[in-house]
Length: 77
Image (cartoon, rainbow, N blue to C red; front, side, top):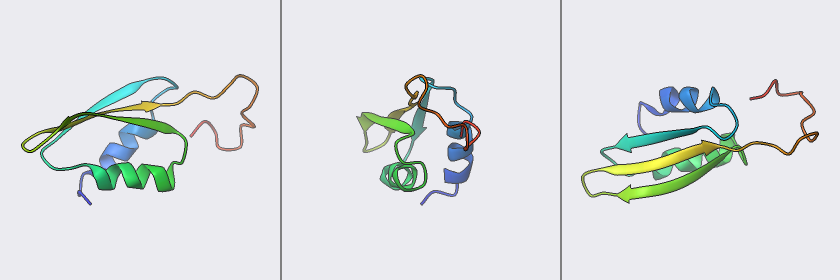
C-alpha cells in the first residue's frame, strides 16, 4: 500500500455527504479501494475514471445517509 494512503484517507474522512475527491495516482489504487471497503464500509463510492498504465484516476464520493437513519454514535465519521 502507498505511504500516502493515510493522508488520502484523512482527506476522505472530512468530506461532507455527497462530496467527491478526485485521486490522481501513478500506480494502481486497488489497495486503497480495498482499505476503504474494509475500514470504512459503505461510506464511499469508488469510480475508476482512468486506468493506467502511466496515470490512474478515480473519483471517490462520500455517501449520504437517508434522513433519520443516523444514530449519531459515530459523530458523522
